[in-house]
Length: 65
Image 1 (cartoon, rainbow, N blue to C red):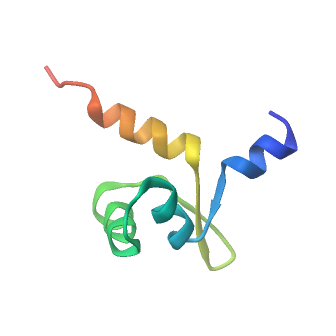
Image 2: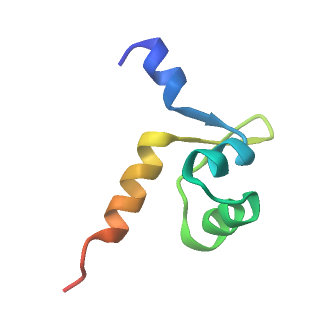
Image 3: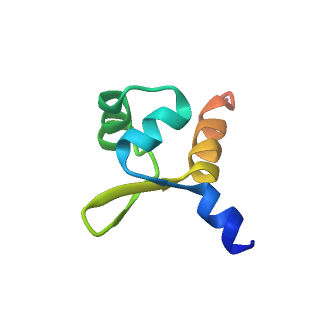
């Protein structure tokens, strides 16, 4: 992966995470705290990768047997 695509994949801050997926910031915080939304911190800022969140959502769409 090139540096440019890695930078494009990074969502820096909960407002950016929420905006990228059409959520409100409170909903993003709730998904992080209660449902394990894949995030990490850079300093004190909560960050995520678009690709990791897309995979997390995809994993939840699969039917359970």
